Image 1 (cartoon, rainbow, N blue to C red):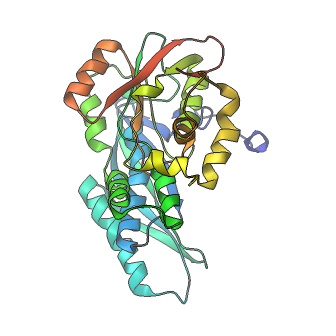
Image 2: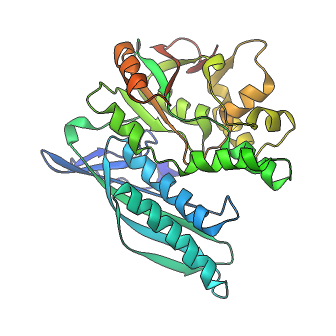
Image 3: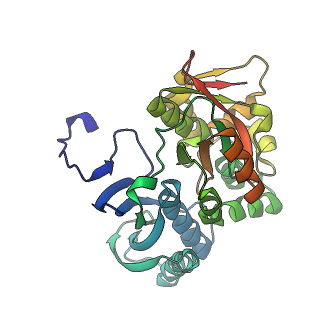
Length: 314
């Protein structure tokens, strides 16, 4: 579809949509560039305040994934004209509280009358043009690290089907509410070759973009992947969100899977995430330093020169 959209060449655009990166980067001066992104979606939890906060955390993440610092945001609201205004107020309040936690100022926004609720933000950040992280810079010899556990989509689907325990839902919500700021700050001063946040396309979908953009192969160690409480159990019970199948159809041709890998583990690698973690490619020694600084981060594989399919699950 995008191939039919006219492109305007501008020398100040450092990162556009060519490699499906997390955000765009536009240079203003030799020392300053803007990072810009937008994201919004329908409710994934029942509590409106929590939904607003998760949506804000998800929108902010793209700026940190580029190495930037979010500074301002514009809200995007679709809400029924005859809907409960107290519910809308709670959605906005939840988003505002999470933005305040991130040190990001809401400047305004836009709303439309829509029978289906949707909420999110367009976020602007700042960055030094010489220190931009992209999803297309992974290098052979790098280690791969990840900063959150997978499974928000499967746990959410289990909740809708009445399968999920309250404890497991609470763990998934806590993960989605966690900002990626601390992880990004722990990466400062290290040599980050490639970075992307894992959201709707799932771990393998975003990994595919990193592998193709960087012209490398990602070797993922399935035994090292970490999953949210209950996620493996619910995957075995078939609580698969529709987006998981879409992600498999999208990225499956680029993935080779070792014989004997449990079906539920493979499925969770395609699971669409909301406010997921950062997938980072960096030199071995810096990966070790990062995990020391940020203990929630963990190694999940390595980068090699392109050999066979772009992603190999070991």
